[in-house]
Every structure is written in structure tokens, then in C-alpha cells.
Amino acid sequence: MGARATPFAVQASFDELGTPLHEVTFVVVDLETTGGSPASAEITEIGAVKVRGGEVLGEFQTLVDPGVPIPPFISVLTGISDSTVAGAPRLASALPAFLEFAGSTQGGVLVAHNAPFDIAFLKAGCAVTGQHWPGHQVLDTARLARQVVTRDEAPNCKLTSLARLFRSSTAPDHRALSDARATVDVLHGMLERLGNLGVRSLDELATFSSRVSPAQRRKRHLAEGLPHAPGVYLFADEHGEVLYIGKSNDLRNRVRTYFTSSETRGRMAEMVGLAATVTPVVCATPLEAEVRELRLIAQHKPRYNRRSRFPERSLWLKLTVEPFPRLSRVREVKDDGAAYLGPFSSARQVELASAAIYEAVPLRQCAGRLSVRARTSACALAEMGRCGAPCDGRESVQAYAEHVAAARGAMEGDVRRVVAAVSRKVALLGEAERYEDAALHRDRLAAFVRAAARVQRLRAFTGCAEVVAARQLDDLGWELLVVRHGRLAGTAVAARGVDPRPLAEAMVATAEVVSRGHGPAPACSAEETECVLRWMERPGVRLISLDGTWASPAHGAGSVRYWSDAAEEARDVFAAAGFVGADRRDLRTSHHPAGVVSRIAG
Image 1 (tube, one colour):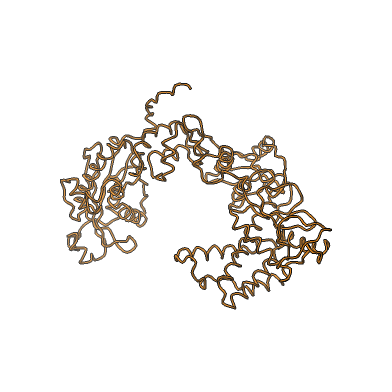
Image 2 (tube, rainbow, N blue to C red):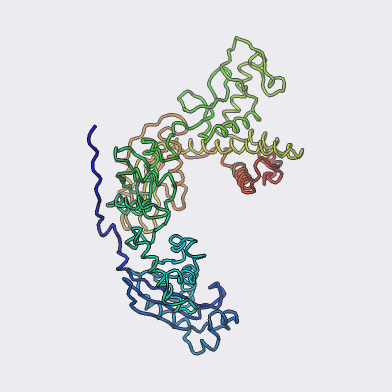
């Protein structure tokens, strides 16, 4: 075995380090108001302190005439009364003066204790007075304190408690400038602690989480050189084994969060501990990044990815091809002329969907092939009228073929027979107050409808040999894509002011050549095609060209998706209530089954 390379430290570039904290100008602000909401209260005082590198650069303080009476309890709390603000400037004059003191957004950070409160009043004031809100980066010392200060040090994260802990030279007294001065001392105390944890730049401060270990922070150099662009990132260990694959609209910012931010999942901390490299795959568009992520996960099967690792293990419900076909659970879609429903997320969902079909169509439920000549004894289902008993010769191949045609039709196009049969059963069970059984049948129908809608949606789209589409971006550019048999074959972006038509023609000429396979997803995974479909269904997407017919069945499952939606809603309510295995009387479907039957049948 070769000798293991000695680890070495990596000096990040100044760009990667971000703005050093000692170069950042902090404007610490505090407000006094007549109440707790900018919708019903006004500002009575503004106080601010500007600091950089631990040095005070200036202070700002002004009373503000709110134009309304100050409530007595506010006067007692702050010492600011109607007589105190008499002659003070109105907000239309005071706010511009503060904004001028705070300066522009370049390099400056607005700091407040419980910042959402103060910032909400300042933004509301700008809206009322017609001022432009400069959009400063905001730092909340209360939020930061919750990560830095323990309960043993301070009973809470109120400004008074923190000022006492960090030995502020100014005691908070509910006056704006005094509270701002105290907040400055609290800020400096916390920055000193964070410096010992390796937080040196503004970027690291903005994304700090105390739950990220020092070992994770020391690997932040792995994000060096990553671009601010959409794409996929691959974490790999020192042997080159891919550990984790993810996607982002901004590769650099996303990868940095694994080392400096709130990425606190235990398995991710373990993964970062093993990671030695991060490889970016820059993509033209976020859609391409999403698709590439799926393909790379399926290719490498990283151990720290939990989804999309094994698309080949998807479950399908198959209507077999034999003299007496049956429903069978399979993992592979073959080119054998069979009907397929799915893919399903679990074996339980396959079982529920199968039961829904059995409720409407008397297919045999026994396993194994049946011979046309050989005879076997019939099961109990034949005696119950749930099966025509082809096994003992009571039902011919021709008669049984009618059931097969009905089942295939329900799976591939017309779901009315299954919906009518199961919804009728739900209604009867509900009337008999057999709510548990009614809920079970509702779940069966929901599983069937969900799977049928999915496979019909896939078939309609993947049946098109080529789809070329475009979507206008916020900057007035165009995002273009070419899809062939449901597989993303090419994508590009036309910048603002550039005619997208020549680019679309070039993209069609150079896009991936895709051969059609078989089944509902003939050229890629069903998950990839669904990613593309979600993009196609976004507002503003325009079809440039279409080779094929893209249409859903007139009586397909998409028209009755409310069954699956209602079942999901009922399960969510049931789980939220914490009643596992309890009575389901409150979980009846929100739709009237009788109305459903009449509408479907009619």
C-alpha cells in the first residue's frame, strides 16, 4: 500500500474569506415606539451608534413626534411623554436623517436587538414617508446570543441580561441611544467569542450556527473556487468515493453552508468529516442541475444520499400477459405487451391499488400461471362471486378477456369503473357507520388514482418524440430546453436582448440523441421526466415545437385526483391529532360519494 499523503493547511483567498469583521461598519440602532406593531403604533425615538473595528465612529439620536398621544404605560416604561416629544421633528424629517447617518448598503450592516421589531418599523416608516429602504444586511444580536450564550451564563437573551453578562458600560433603560450603546457592547462581546470559534468574516458571521463543529469549519477551504452558478456538487473522500451529491442555484453559497451555517443533520456532519474534495458540475439552468443530480445519484449511489439512489428498485403493478392474466408486483418494466401502473413508493401502495382494481374487476387473485386445459379447484373468492373461477373451467378465456380489457382500460385510460365501484363501497360502509372499513377503501382508491394519474401523465408526455419549449426569466432572458421521449436532451439560456430562436434551432441540432425504449418512462427514470413536467407546467412556459400528441385521457385519473388529495389531508389530520389506530369517524371524505358515482356513471 502506498503512503498516505500528509494533510496540509490551505490558505483561502481574500475573496473566499469574505469581508474581515474588523473592516465591517456596524450601525447599531434602537427604536422607542408607542406600541408593538407598525400597523398600529408610531416611532417616538431613534438612537444609533456607528462602529468599526471596535471604535465608535459616531452617534445619532433624535426624538420623533408620533402625531398621536403616547399611551401612559409607554410613558412610564420609556420616560417619553407627549410633552417630551413636543417640538420634536416628525418622522418625515427624522427618518431621512437616520438613513443618511446609516449610509449605503456597501459594506455596512444594520444591527439591532430583536431586529425584526426595529426593522419592521423602519421599513414601514419608509413606506409611509416615501423614502427608499436601502436594504442593509441585518444582524440580530438576540438571535446570535441564543447560539453563543448558555442558560448558565444568562437566564434569557434580553438586552438587560446580556448587558450584565458582557459588562456593558451603559445600562439599558428603554431609551433609544442608551439601548443602542448597550447593544454595541453586547455585539463586541459576542464577536470576541465567535473569533475564538474561527468566525473571522462577515459571511461567516451571517451564516454562523453554534451547532456546526470546529472540525466542519476547518474544511471551509473545500468551497474555494466554486462558482456562483447553478449546478451539482459532489463530496468525495480521500479515496475518490462519492459520499454525497446535491444541487443548488448557487454552488459556492450552498457548499459553504456545510462548513459555516445551519447544516446540522448528524449524517451531514459525519459526511463532511470524511470529505476531502468537492467537485462542481456547472449547469446552464436549475432544471439541468436537478436532472443531473438525479442521474449522478443513480450512477454513484452515494451512501449519504437517502433518495433517488435506486430508481431501478421502483415498484410497478403489472397486468400479466398469459391466457388468464393477473395483477403482479414487479420491479422491472419489460417490452412484453403488459399493462403497467406506477411507479409506487412502497409495497403497501401497490397492495392498496390492487385492491381497488379487484373491487371493480373480478380478476383472479391467485398466483402462478393457469393452463387452459388443466383444472384445479376453485378458491373461496369464486364462492363469494369475486372471481369467475377460470381455474376450474367455469370461465372461458374469452369471457375472462373481458375482465382483462376492463382492468387494462382502467390502468391506461378510463378510470370511471374503478372510481364508481370503490366510491360506492365507501358510501355503503359510511352509511353503516363502518368508518374504519370506509377509510381503508378510500385509501385504496386514492392509491389507485394517484398511480394511474402518474402513469397516464408520463405516457402522454414520453410519447412525444421531441418537445422544444421556452420560459422567460425575470431578467427578460429566455430559458430553453429540448426534451425527447421525456428525457432532458438539451438546455440553454438566451441573454436579455438576444433572439432565442437561433439558439433554439442550434440546441435542437446539437441536443442528445434519445432512443425510445418501452414502458411509461422509455428513456429515463420516471423521476427525471416528472422534473421536466413540473418545469413545463410553470406559468409562462411556451411551446416552440412539438413532435407527437401530448394529451391526457378524457376520463383519466387526473380528473379525479381529489381522492388522493382527500386521503392525504385526512391522514395528515389524523397524524397531527396523535390518534394512531383510533376511531376515524372525523376522517370521512370531504366529497359526497353518491355525487361522485352519479357524475362518473352519467
